[in-house]
Structures are given as C-alpha cells and as structure tokens.
Image (cartoon, rainbow, N blue to C red; front, top):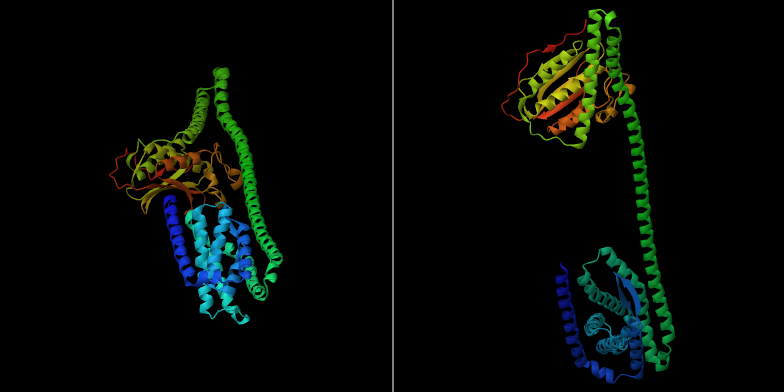
Length: 517
C-alpha cells in the first residue's frame, strides 16, 4: 500500500469511528444518560473530577517511533459504569477526554476521535456486562461479568487506537503487536481491579471517595514504573542484540583481515617462487646458448666439424626453449589482462586437431612415444590455434613427467554433447586435493608427487591451457586415469557444433615417434 493510499484509508477510518461514536453518544444521552447524570449524587461528580484529572495526566508509552498514552481513567470509567450505568459512564468518559484534549491543545480531529472511540469501547463493555447479568447496584456476585466487560473495554479500546498506527505506518509484525499488548496488560488489570473499590467507596460516603487520590497515586506510580521497566528491558534487549550484531561484524571483519593477510602472504610467497623459478628456468637455456656460442667463438679452430655442428644444435635447442618460456610468460600475462575475442573460430574436426598436435609434438620430441586414438568425426566450432596450443601444452607437460620408455595416450572421443580430447601419461599423477590448484599460475607439484620433470617449466602450461579452453566455450579438468600404469589424465571438453568440418589434414599417424630404444 502506497503512502497516499494509507493516508486515504486512515482518513476514512478516523471519520467512520468519529461518526459512529458521535451517533451513539446522543442515543445514550436520550436513553437515560442525561437524566442519570442530572440525578447523580455528589460522589458521581467527585469520580468525574478524578476522571478528568486522570485524562490530563497520562502515562507515556513509546511505540513504533511515536508515543501512546495510558491513563488511570480506566478505574473511574469502569467505576461509573458499575455504580451509575453504561450511558452516564460513556458520556462522562467522552466529556473528560474532550476536556483533557482541549487543555492539552490537541488537534480537533484527534479530540473527536478519542471521545468517539471511548464511547464505543465503554458502550460495548456495558452491553456485555448487562448481557452477562450485570445490574445496578453492583454486587460481589457480578464480578465475573465485570471481568469480561473490563477485558472487552481494554481490547476494543486498544484495537480502535492501534488501527490508526497500522493504517498510518503499515501493519507491524505480530510479535510487536503481542509485545505491546503484554506491556499494557498488567497496568490495565491493576486499574480495572480498582474500579469495584471506587464503587464501594461511592456507595458508602462521598468523603471516602475523596480519599481515592492517595491509593490512585500509588497505582499511577506502579503502572508507570511497570511500563518504564518494560521499556528499559526492551531497550536492554535491543542494545544486547545490537552488541551481538557488532560483535559478529567485528568477528567477520577480523576473519576477513586474516584472510587478506593470508592472501598477501601467499601472494608474497608466489612472487618469491615466481622470481626464483623464472630466473632459474630462463637462466638455464640462456647459459646453454651462451656457453655453446662462447665455445664456438674461442675454440672454433680446434673443433671438428661434427663438434661444431653439435654446439650449434645445442644453442638452437636452448634458444628455442628460451623462446618458448618467454612466449609462455607473455601469453599468460595477455590472458590475465585482455580477454581474447573469438573472431577466428570456425568449424573444425577435434580429432584432426588432436592428430596435428600429436604430429607436432612427435617431431619436437622424437624420443617420446604417443599413442593416438580417434573415435570418428568430432565437429566443433573453435579457434584451431587455441586448441593446438592447449594440446601442445598438455602433451609437453605429459612428456616432462612421463618415465623413460613410457607411452603417452592421446584420445579424441564423443561424450554426450561434448567432444573430449584426453591426454594421459604414466607419471606420478595428480593428488585429489591438488586437482584444482594444479591450474593456478606458477603451480608445480614435482616436490609433492616425487616426479622429476625433464626440461623444467615455470608452472604456466596448465594455467594457460585452461584459460584458452574456457575462452573457446569448453573446459579443462583432471580426469581419472584409464590406463593400467595410472598417471595423470587431462580432459579437454568442447561442445559439439554439428557443423561440417573443414580443417587442414596432416599425414595419418596413429602412433607417432616410436619409443626410444
């Protein structure tokens, strides 16, 4: 409900209650109310005076950002009802409310609404009292009927007033409504219990009625203390809840700070490892290149043609290795900062890409055996260069970790809606707890697995491979080895496209580069 609609509903409700009360008021006046007031004894007027005073001095009850009022007028209003009837009691309570409102300079609409809701509530209570056998004069046997009437007066009075706040601010939670009722129950019960005492005193002597201010002052202070105690308890509970929230937030911030500190420590460790690894891995091939060149430069005239040719080959291989390391570092940096665009994607056969990667790695490392297994056409839409880079990284990684004389398995098969290209070696494998960490930058596991990779590396091959796979719409994961020798199995998964493939073919070689003799 919007604010405008709430105010429209509130205005309609206030007008309806005010109209109902001011229609019922004259009916009560005509139906014996005025006559009973005119014929009332002095005790009636004394009680009425106390009623006006009690209306002028309410007890403030903070609620929902506003302040509601509880008065001791319940005692005198119910006393008038028991001693002189419903009509004079309702008219007297409404009159006392109007006088108090004028003295406090309240808005006229609020004065009219308060008077009307008092008339309605006390008239309903008096009607129930009469219905349950209540009559004048009041006797002890009528206490049950009076108790029911008092409950109706309390509930109806609170409902009529509470509806104003609900329409103005929206319905409060049920727990808050019950808490408000619970706060008022004890004071209202004390005030209602005093009403029969007022009746007894009024029936005996007006002088005894004049003594009422002293016990009523005690009742007033007791009710005020009870309400303040409940308000203090609620404030303490709210403060405790706020303290718990603050403590929880502080604990969360402390945990976050510890996590940041751990991340900084890990980042520092990775940076140190990176510097050590990169410097070592770059220095090794660079030393080979420089050493071969220095030997050729200083002792070329003493070397045989075969030895000179061997030194040139060493420099070329180490130079190529150095180039590959630098390219790997640059590619990782590019993937980290600039997402690649898939403008070069086209329909290709994943099996043929696997064959090309097998042929390429076979030429590069003639001492490593690779067994290739293809399972029909596997049409995918990718950038072939990216897939070849992935497979080259996987095969190079497998070659480093595979024992001498072992065989690498390269398989391309269909699995559901995906083409799966798997590379499996016979090395030490990847522990289950490390199957995600292995794809992090600069992560190397040879110190944990006991492997001894040939050719080193900076720990970027698998990171680059997974990033490229995901940019092509696929993924790269560690799978369960299917070979008897165990080892590590990496599976490249690419979504099948169903398109006609057109890929450059290479000579067929299901087994490339035989095992070293």
